[in-house]
Image (cartoon, rainbow over all chains, first blue to last red; front, side):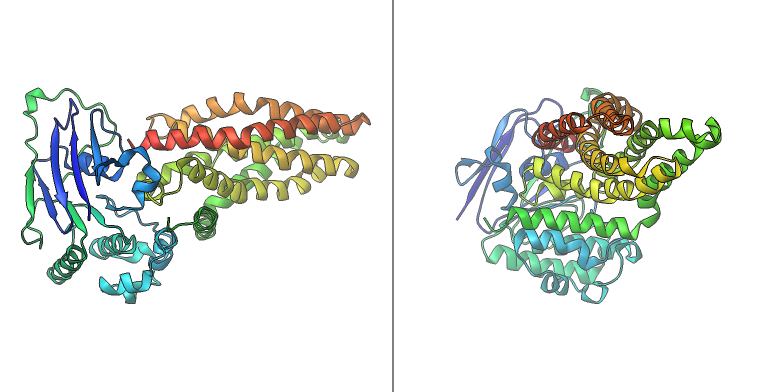
Length: 214
Length: 226
């Protein structure tokens, strides 16, 4: 169905990283803090332009039309991006409108239907993470880009996540996830980003951290 | 394409209005500032009705301008901080239209309440009721301009360390023409001169800002998430 090959070169964080994935594949990005895992995900999501290299989708430059690329990608950042004043359902409304998906069934898949009408500020960290994952499901996109999806999840939800991953890959979807802990992704390939020696790193130029702090 | 642009813009507007209602105190802050600042002038200048009537156009306009600045800082700042901006940009909507939707939300939550509060404030300052139409028409155009230029400036300073300080420095010079035309129209109305040309110039300013500001703001948003 689709074939992504990515390679990009950036002097600071990522140096000519490249890989190709086919339908149903999964890729785990590993590496020390600051290795550029999150940055790579943001490039793949079309949020950030690579200084060199291309992101190809079925052989076509994906970042040439970022609005179109957005429809192919479901992105989960390390922030849950929930508005604390809105209820869970209201938080998902915009994503539902964008994809035409059904928020109720997505909340049900992640076992948070009972929380749908609670304001997000009353949820625990793990429940917020599940809500953010519900938004990934809601996007109905073939490519899932997940930045530490397991952050704050309990054992049961990890099992749930495994089922969702399997169903998504069965349908020909692709999962790319950064992680520091084992994820329920059988036969996933692993791309270990080397990271740079502390002494090689010039002072970071961005204001935001390149990677999450665990 | 699975999405429709108008329905997504409506969804962003709905979301922002709902947030504005839930955080009522933040929303009312700008209007309260407007009324309080306007109410301080009679105390400072003395209660001479003639003087206040003379100064009312300038007072109302300057206070409205400053009040509209207050919520600008959070307009995109809050979205960037909690990661929502990433998700807004990934709805598939062009960045400039996202910026336009947020500017419309700013007008609905700040400009419109200011417009409603301007009438009572003007009466309090003793402005003749004959010039009320000119005041409200001028402020209607003026607050729209403020939302557009303010939204553009807010997206440009997004992610900058001293963004909150930079914001007024960017917005105030750019909105000076609106202030001059708006206050001049009121002045003309009070002295019995023709106020049409001033309002037309205000309208022309708005017509230029409608396409240009969202475009610049969209580029600012894209740059902020990089």
